[in-house]
Length: 188
Image 1: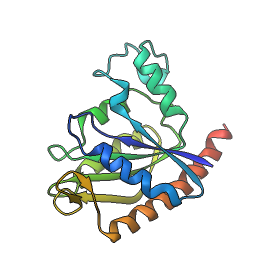
Image 2: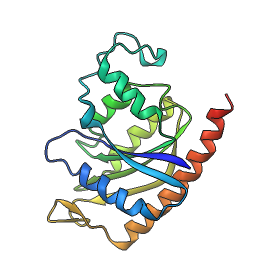
Image 3: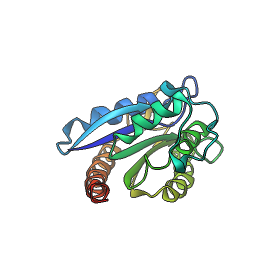
Image 4: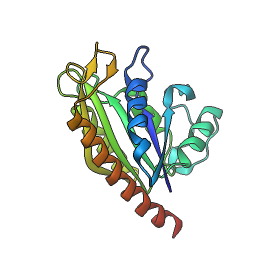
């Protein structure tokens, strides 16, 4: 069984990311071929990248980096929950990704985004490019939530049934890719 982390993509106070991650986790309960957990980047208290050696070397000197590395390494795939800030991803998520290299490689990723105008779509595209440079396979399935129509009182996610169906398709595709890539990682 593959392990998928639902990564909260911001540390901003009052963020909707934990509520969206909880919604994703609740929807994942029907998935039989994957195990899902929430991985909250705020819990790791990562400052702006402060490692003196480039992450591609894997020679981490800071305790927060070692803890983040250990947490990420145990997963086969990721669902990044990302808000859209100024037509891009949250800086905390970009920073968290930049901290590591090998821990991301040859794994699969998907996105659930949210925002007021475009449902967070503009935050996802730069993340796809960034993750490609780290040898992460991002799947095409993507769920985007509008803060105006997919949330109750602008706080709790309550998406339409079509969004639930999109998420279910995302789960299935991500699980297949994560399983396939775990075979690649074990063959090296």
